[in-house]
Image 1 (cartoon, rainbow, N blue to C red):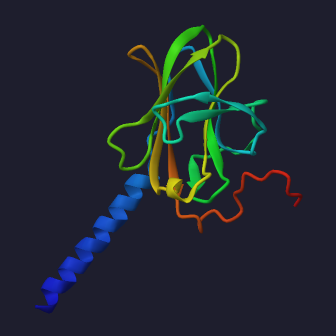
Image 2: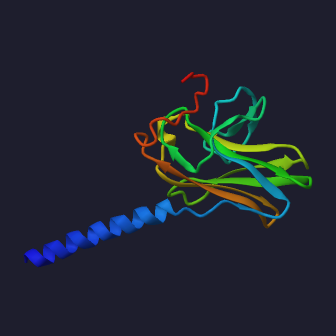
Length: 176
């Protein structure tokens, strides 16, 4: 009986280790030809100069940034803490209208989505800020965009427990 229990415990430990390894080896960022992912990671909290309706998102709107943010940490691992801002900044070589922007949260059966225009040569920002406790969902968060059926980019962020990466913050006003 003891060997049977030890075998089950060993299998559970191995399964857990394999699952963590799979999460650690997230899919690398993808960009279609003509799309440059200039920055990926955690950025300083920007000034917001308004909102735009986005009815297929949890809040029903997206924030519009006054200026492109400063990326403080170029990484895809994100701590689940209120105030953390993470995302992608890109530049395209062509104009595109009605680009579908999607965010897949862990465990979701459908993405949050909205449409936007991309202007050639201009910085375009796609980000997310943990503003509410119910947004702190651990696991892979995927951000992607489509021009029609063409995948323009896909970036997967691994959201980790808030106790991990203790020095990572989006409050860039702190002086070290």
